[in-house]
Length: 356
Ligand code: SAM
Ligand code: DTB
Ligand code: SF4
Image 1 (tube, rainbow, N blue to C red):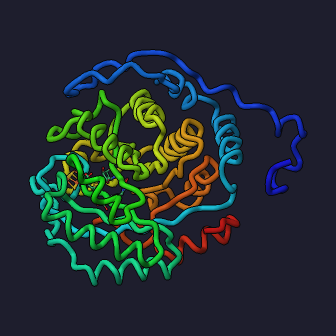
Image 2 (cartoon, helix red, strand yellow):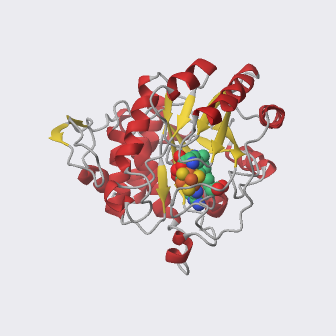
């Protein structure tokens, strides 16, 4: 019987306990990534790209059924975790990420604002807690923090932690020793995305390399901070490249604890807006498929519906929850773009019987 004794009662018992196929395990050396400074060592690849691509190509209902089975083995089926984002330093960034409103070289008319003060951050975190968020994520438009940048952020982490919230930061690349300082201040999660497949990465970003991102993730992991790492879909990548992104994430050892799946928000003035103009965002079913495959390949992760959630609509979001998404960004603002209203999210959860 299903753990909550509901939905699946009408199905024959044999179907419910049907074991999942074993996790693939293939010994292989990961090839040199584009822009990599050195080859990654031989490792056990749990998820070859071809297998992830095969999952993406399953009939929709079969894929969702498999994802739902994995989901129910590892998570409360009707529960969604809420994270609230705050941009603590906005715009003026030196990097050239093709999707980003905050790169100073893009013409997005975004106003640059300096690092927020501690009171403003505390008040925002308190408000997020009162609205029901359990995690507070502070984002800064930096290539990476300098030591003089990091110190005020450490104070913010301490304050947010003291409110009883889980803490998360996304500050760009970390240098040696910085993850330890964040950990000692009470940081629970560090968000740093791989963004896309290694082979598509150079089409999106040139000012930092894939290996730089992997190095930062290694530092976060080595410091004992939980890893929040995902990517963006709908940037003009192929299905094979979406599979390659998911495979990269799933083959991190261990896989990330949180996996944000962003649907590109096409911001006017960014190179990706220009490139994608006229094309709608990724097909909703393909987005749901990506979520399902993230769930199957990273069974214990929180899979988070992130940027682009508004555009999914209510039915699209419901399908994502069915596919195993169990976390959202909650609150009217992401970093510089909009997000569904808190009231709309509450109404959707009530309609779906979701407990947040
Ligand atoms: N500057 C830091 C960095 O790049 O690591 C932290 C902030 S950055 C905005 C965090 C992530 O937000 C990016 O890695 C990207 O995955 C996501 N993101 C940014 N702009 C986006 C957009 N327009 N659409 C979808 N995701 C976006
Ligand atoms: C993540 O993967 N998505 C969030 C968070 N991590 C920092 C950011 C989404 C940003 C969307 C565009 C914006 O609001 O500027
Ligand atoms: Fe800067 Fe981060 Fe935006 Fe890239 S994603 S331009 S690093 S703020």
